[in-house]
Length: 420
Image (tube, rainbow, N blue to C red; front, side):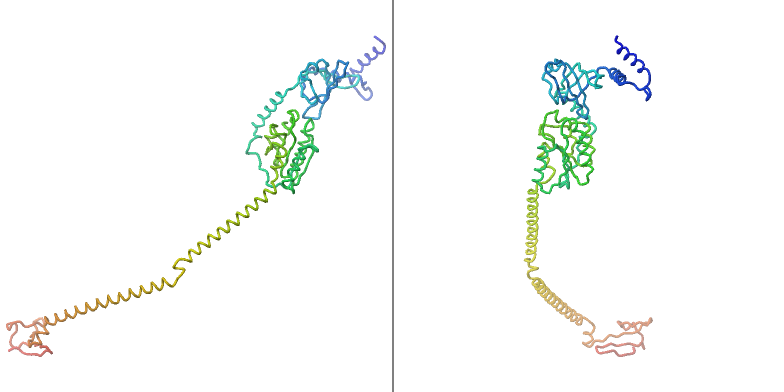
């Protein structure tokens, strides 16, 4: 062993057992070696991420990859054998999701950390879809997809928040179609990344900013179509929960008709395209103007119809005899009353005449049969006073004694006499 190597070993042994202080600092090599020892204790791990860079120079056996976390701005370097890359079918490309079995390695000379891969597996579309489906079931079980929690969109929002990529076709489609339908539509546009690791945090931040704006009545998250990998941020759990917690109605306009990220299920309204979102969030000024004219015409026709109906009814009432000639019925009833009065008078007079004739006849019969007629023929009625003092008609001479006072009644009066 050389003198320098021996000195280095002795120095490392002496410094490695003593704590570092300002008076006794560790050399860089000691710190690097301790960091390497800590990292190497981790052992082999499985890591999932997205490949953002592949460097495989011809004539070398080692390939260098950059592995990034899709949901955070974190990346690591990965080294592997080139034959391992060539054995993967189909070949890996930038943006592909992979599973890497690797051992962390710390390079003392440069002080860098990397992963030494022993196996690389491409994450297929089926695995991505399976993970999205598991998350879909979880969020559905929590009620984030429930229809009763979805809010209706305002008929005419004061302000419209738009989250989309900068200078993207989705932004153009939403703005152009919405302003064609309603030229006074007011937009608050926030441009964010719509794919990759930065998409989720930027979209969540923009959503929070628009949700806090009192002038924004509806928020649209728009992006054009793409592969399953490109649309992964819009199936992220963090983004889905942020949309569910927003107080402002959210419209999802991601991709095209076949695309269905989880954001479509959590959002209050799902539109198949950005153009469809523009047609949903604002009314068509021409359609509304036509509808106003139609309603105005219907109201006018309804009012005219009601007035015409009331007029016809009034004409019918006025044409009735009682209203056309109000004095006629009274006059006819007056004539009827006079007729009945005359009939009643004649009937009463007839009855009186008949009764008077009957009374005269009865009187004549009574006169003929009564005592007055007998007295007029020369007869007289003799009366005496009995023992009780009552005046009685004398019917026999035996009823009175001599000297009894008698009363003799003739036709024109009465005289007194004494019995002998």
